[in-house]
Image (tube, rainbow, N blue to C red; front, side, top):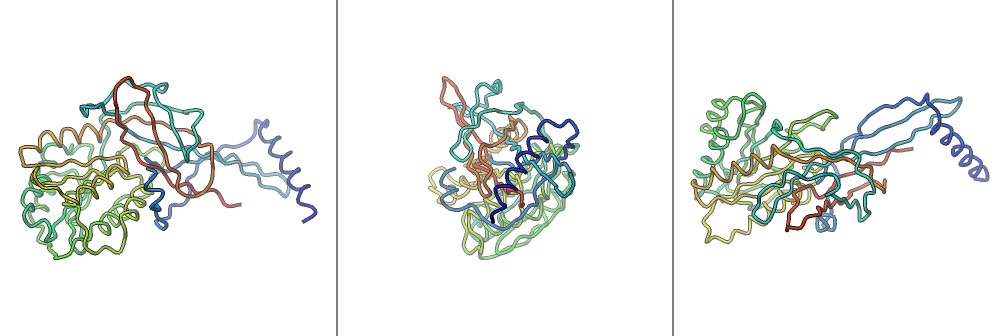
Amino acid sequence: MQNKPIVVALLSVVLAALSSSPSVAAKTTAPEDSPTGELSESDLAQVTATGSSWTIAKAVLPDYTIRRTVPEVRIQFTVADSRDRLLQSLSKEDVSIVDNRLSVQRISSFSRQEDLPLQLSMLLDVSDSVEKTRVRERLAAQYFFANVLRPETDRVTLLAFSNDVRVWQGSTGNREELSDALSRIKQQGYATYLYDSVFRACLDQFPVSRDGDIAQRVLIVISDGIDTGSLHSLSDAISTALRREVQIFAVSVHSPRQNSTGDVVLQSLSESTGGKLYVANSEKDFSVIFAAMAQQMRTQYVLSYQPTEHTSGFHAVKIEVRSSDEVRVHSRVGYFFEAPKN
């Protein structure tokens, strides 16, 4: 223990030398993904998140290997005015970020992306709780395939759930294959395992994101939002979506006179991950709803920054936009940071 100050001093000297050395090699890697762990209730209450990429400078000296890690966080978001119209002319100067209650001093990059390809999974509720709206929910799925899906760029996996979740059509851009699979769904069940199904869909259908991936990772949930027995919690489902960088968009079909408690759950799932809940009172609402959803999914601002604090665990993120009008930011509530092990 008496040699510790000497070792620390030596490491400080070496790190200083590395900072000025032109021969340091740069390498980009990503931390290992782990589906374990969950977003705590306090984290969820703070309420987008993205995973982080890593820039690692490495130098090998006699008897020493020194690593300097700088996390780079990437976040996608949209901003809408009081009439729910997307703002499309923001600049980097209009945006500020708070990461774990600390202000981010510098935004490394900022851009606006349009016509993004979509990597989608659609999760359709076929449990007994949606018996009265089952036909309209299938019509909503069919409308999406016919009017939002772009076969040349988008890919969709179709799943249905009750007391279990099942894949009815693997990833495809073929509208006919998706429509045929939708018509063949016979799966039913008395229980509704919504949280378990969202958890499994995010974990199984969306591999770990890699640098250079540009497709939007989206889970569309068509359900009444009721859960009657999942082993996983709502926070488990949200945590897995955040780890897999999946945005959740939800569609609930019911009468405007109905005060659905499930809508609160669907809103939490969607808004925590940077998506949005849409409520359709009838099939007549589909054209407006899905046009707005398509714009929200395909047009996003993207920024990156280096967080001030590098502690492991969940980092809550808040994006603030300077505007003379009332605006609402749709972004993920945070990301999971895993500090490198010594």
